[in-house]
Amino acid sequence: MLRESNQLVSKVLGMLAREIRPGISTEWLDKLAEEYIRSHNAVPGFLGYRGYPRTLCTSVNEEVVHGIPSKRILKEGDIVSVDCGVLLNGYYGDSAYTFAVGEINDKVRKLLQITKESLYLGIREAKAGNRVGDIGYAIQQHCERHGYSVVREMVGHGLGQNLHEAPEVPNYGKRGTGPKLLNGMVICIEPMINMGKRYIVQDEDGWTIRAGDGLPSAHFEHAVAIGENEAEVLSTFAYIEEALGEKEF
Ligand code: MF3
Ligand code: CO
Image 1 (cartoon, rainbow, N blue to C red):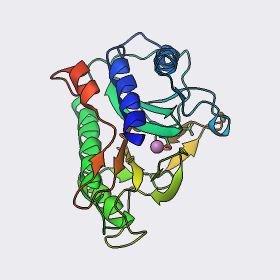
Image 2 (cartoon, helix red, strand yellow):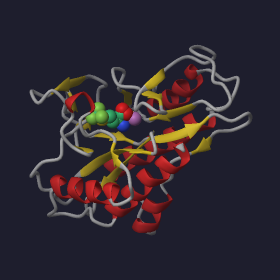
Image 3 (cartoon, rainbow, N blue to C red):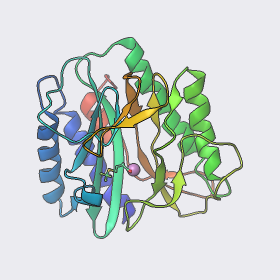
Image 4 (spheres, rainbow, N blue to C red):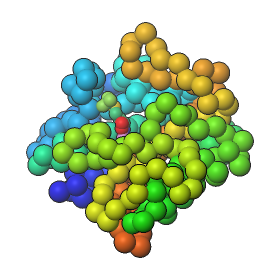
């Protein structure tokens, strides 16, 4: 069931990948996502969650996560994290990707590259017998080695019949610490990585989280099932990669 929900989220992100370009609003992306989800017998997973007003979270440039889709027009050189959740047959899907809007500069592309790599390094640790801290350690090491910083206040999470379940999955940590990972557990790993300092502030809207120093922030998220020897990645960026072709960001 979780495989199906996460495949649907992945298809939504793949569909949106074809629409993201300078001149469109984040509200338009939200409308497309909601229609797509409803036409596939699912409902938006974030809409109404603790009063959240939309289907997607769209976080632009220094916005880290939980940006609310609006009339804001995306412009050349922006980056936008698109985070999508669905509820299908009682189970949640949850995945996110940070897209380039038109051409972005090399420094920002590197931030996206390293953050995405760190997600997969974290996933490599998501196997039975390891601990949650092993995931965070792998992500933190990779990002800090490149001079980036890890947001502490926001974390990954278990996923199932609820959007957020135990355990919390921080993107920082020490090897061999934290809850033990067991075969069959499903968790979302979602590094939120700042080009500058790790500190964040929350907007007056009660949702938007942004980097305090105003520098860009990247966010990628996969849902994975813990396996005996390796994780099964339940979401996929294959639809996005198909849509973007050679150009990853
Ligand atoms: N992927 C994010 C999260 O996991 C999205 C939550 S947005 C909310 O936790 F609006 F639903 F809160
Ligand atoms: Co999540």
